[in-house]
Every structure is written in C-alpha cells, then in structure tokens.
Amino acid sequence: MQGGQISTQDETPVFSSPNSTYITSVERPEGNTLTGKQRRSIADALETLNAVQNLKTEALGSFDINGECYSLPKFSFRDKRVSDPIRIGIFSSIHGDEPAGAHAVISFLTELATQSELSFDYEIFAYPICNPTGFEDNSRHSRRGYDLNREFWKNSAEVEVQLLEHELRTHKFSGIIQLHADDTSDGIYGFVRGHTLTENLLRPALLEAGKILPRNINALIDGFAARDGIIYDLYEGILASPAEMNPVPFEIVFETPGNAPLDLQVKALVVALKTILTEYRKLISFAQDI
Ligand SMILES: [Zn+2]
Image (cartoon, rainbow, N blue to C red):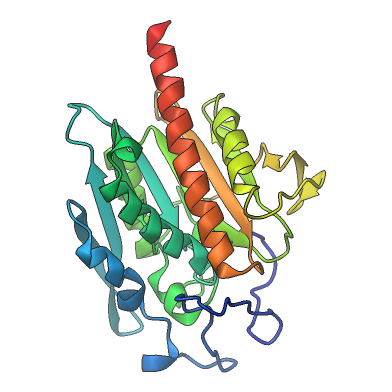
C-alpha cells in the first residue's frame, strides 16, 4: 500500500511463473485509456467462481465511469450450521495494479466452499475487485484518477467508496481484512488496527505466509515504524470500519512484496487468510469460555 508514485509498466519488472494462469500485466500506452482486449478482464478473473457451490454472488452498483457501466463484485458464503455466524469482510484490489489480492480471494472462496472446517462459524463477505476500472487498467488509481484507499469516511463522491462504506455500515463486520501488494517491499508485512488482540491474528498469519515469501523485518516500512513486520499505524482515509463500531472489530492490512512471483503472492495471501480465520475462531471460543 505504498503511498508514492504509480508504477508504470516500463519501470516495474513483471514476474511470471512458466505455469502461471494469472494475467500478470497489461500494456498501458502512456496517457491513453485502454480499450477492449488491452484491459485486464474482470470476467476472466472471476470465471472460476461460477462453478463454486453455495456462493452468493452480487453486483453492487451499477455506476458509470467515463460512459461505461461498472459494478462491484461481491461474494458471500455462510456456514449454515450455526445460527449467528461471525461476519468477516475481505477486500482486495482497491489498488488496481495489485491483482494478487483478487486472485487470492477467488482461490480462498473456492476452498472455503469445499472445506467445511475452514468456514465453520463464519459468514464471509468478499469484495475481490474493489477498484474495477483500476483493475482493468492495471493502475493504482481508479479511471477517474482517485486512490480510492484514501477516500473513506470523508464524504467521498467516488461511487466505489460509497458502495463499500454502505457494506461496512450494513454488515457491521467483526473483522476486516484488506489485501495489498507493495512493490517497494522485499517481504510480507501487515498493518493492525482496531481490536487490541488484532496483532495476535496477524503474527501467526505472517509466520505461516513467511514459509512462502520472506518477511520484511525492517524497523521502518513504507514510512512507518514496524516490529517483526507489524505496523501499528495506518494511512488516513483507508477502507476501515465506521468509527462508532462497538465492539471494536479487528482490522488487518496484509501486504505482499509486489514484485514477487504472482503465484507465490497468491499462495501467501491465501495462507494468511486461512490462518487469520482459524486464529480468530480460537480467540472467540477462548473468550467465551472465560
Ligand atoms: Zn495497495
């Protein structure tokens, strides 16, 4: 979630694995708007989810950007064995040039729907492509020129932000997980906010994901003081819970090194998501026992 300049394809090395099924880059002629096949396809990215059973699919919107119609894809999966599941919100690719998060959420949802122990006690709300025009253009900003992840809770006119704020208000998530990639970092790291026990969720997630990609252990990451890959501070205006939420939810921003092979970023993010859910379930049941 680095706050600097937008990287262009000319400057950013694009890694890809020989067997990768992911679309890693799109050609972006300087100053031109991409059309048709030049864009990264949202439909292609989401296609595998069509076959996933018991997944509720919605399109939030629609809204118009430069004369074209868009919506925000939303997927939810509910454990029907419990009457009052824990609601968790998962958000990715709000920076359109960070596609690993979207692919990770898609892969995670596929596993969630087939592995009943993973979904136990949860209702998962997933928003894999929070910035559809940026995702198509492989651009951090939306096509209207906004870093959407600096626009939250400040009466933004950007429709993507308004739609997501509505979701955050309506669902009152117990936890929020945001997936990002940082091309200035050589390792994984994360931000914590909200519930005081949040770092107890991020720490094991970094440990498990650290088996796939190295951890960034620098004392300063992205301009913030960090300890063992954990930052206890956040940018203003990022996607977050409404301020008045009670009880306070946990909020985690998980970052992969943006120049690492995409397959490994996806793997690391999926492991991180699974670990966070497992640890939170443990934490909740422990709290109920005391
Ligand atoms: Zn980001």
